[in-house]
Image (cartoon, rainbow, N blue to C red; front, side, top):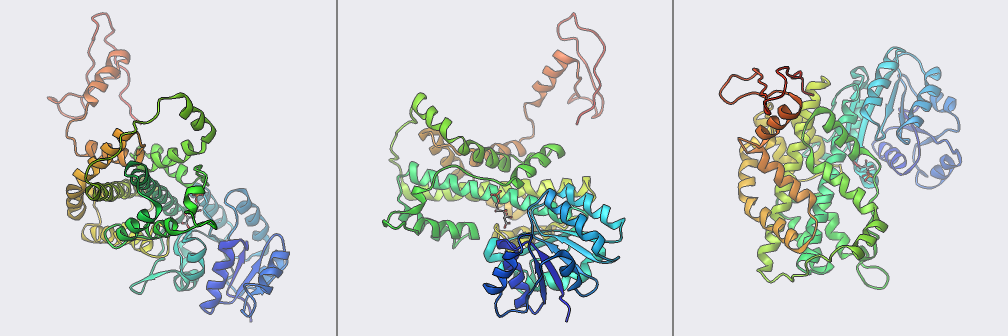
Length: 482
Ligand code: 6PG
C-alpha cells in the first residue's frame, strides 16, 4: 500500500509530526538529507509504526499515492527552494508540495505562483506548538493554492489540536496567507514572552520576591484572565531546581536568541504603516539583551539604578503588575490583529479574524483563554476596526488602567526597564487621544520644507502653506504621504 503523505526533514518538528500522523492512521513515508537519520528514526522513535523510510527523493515520491503530498519540514530560506527544484521533475500535475517551516510569506507567495504555473499545488503552512504540539496536536495555519486544501485537509485537521471538538486548523487564504498569519503569531509570541519577563523583573528586583514566590504568583495568575501556555510554563520554570537545589532560571545567561519571525513582523508593520510598538519593543529588548558585554561595561560606567527598597503594599503591587501584564497583552493583540486587518486589505488575503483566534486557541505557543474573548469579539462584529473598541476589551482596559500605571511607575522609580509595558501604555494613551501634537509636527514640516498642512477650520484634503519666516517662497512641496 502506498503512503498517504511524504515528509522531508527529520529534525524535532518533522519527527513528531510524522509520529502524530501515524497515530491518526495515516501512512507516512520519510526522507532526510543525511539518510542515516532515516534509519535511526525507524529504529528508534518510529519503531513499531507504519512509517516507511526512504533514502532518495525518487524513492520517496514513488512510495506515495496520487495525488502525492510531499511536506517539507526544513530550514526556511534557500533550502526550501532547493528541495522544490529537485521535487518538481519527479512530481506530476496535481501533486502537492507543503512547506511547514517558518518561511517568509513573500517567499510563499512567489513559490505558490511559480508552482501553479507548472500545475503543482503549493501550500505554505504555519505549524505552531513546538515539540509537544507537533507530537500531540499543533495549531496549523495553511495557505497557498486553495486547490490543494481538500486533499490535505483530512490529514491536517486530524493531527491538529482541537478545542471543543473544533480543529485548530482552517484554511487561512491564498498564497502566503498561512505564513503571514504564522509570522504575526510569532510576533505576538515575542510580545507575550517580553511582557512576562517584565513582570518577572518587577516582581523579583522591584519587590525582592524569590523564585518560589514567583512560581506561586504565576501559578495563581494561570487560574485567571492570564491563563495561557506561556504563563503555565513560566510557573514551572520558576519551580525547576538545578542539581544543587537552586533555581535553574537564575543561572541562565541573559542573552536572548531569535530566529527572525518577530523582526519580520516589525518590518511588515513599518511597511504597512501600522503601529506595532509592543512587538517592536520586544524584538529590540532581545537585541539589547544580546549586547551583554556592552551592558556589563555600561553597568560599570553609568550611575547605578536607584536602590529604593519597595515599602508599599506588596499584595497591591503584585496585583498592579498582573493588571499591567493583562492590559499590555490586550494592546499587543489589538496591534497584531490591526496589522492583519491592514495586510488583509493590502495583500487581498480575506483573513477571517475569528477563525484565526480559533486556530490559536489550542496547540500553539500563544494558546490561551484570552483568545476565546477575541473570537467572541470578532463573532459579534467581524468588521471590528480594533479590538480595543470591543465592549469586553474597552471595559477590561478601564479596570486595569490604574494598576498598569502603578507597575510602570515602580519600574521608573527603581530603574527597572519595562519597554513593552510602557510602549503599550503610550500607544493606548495615544490611540484614545482626540488631538495629538502632530499639529506642531506639521507646522515644523511646513516651516522647514513647505510640506503643507491641513486646517481644523477647513475641510480635509485642502492643503495650506505658510511663509513662516517672511522670506520663504510661496511654492509648496507635494502633499504625498507614504
Ligand atoms: C511556534 C514557535 C516556533 C519558533 C520558536 C523560536 O509557534 O511553535 O513560534 O515556530 O520557531 O518559538 O522562535 P525564536 O527563535 O525566534 O524565538
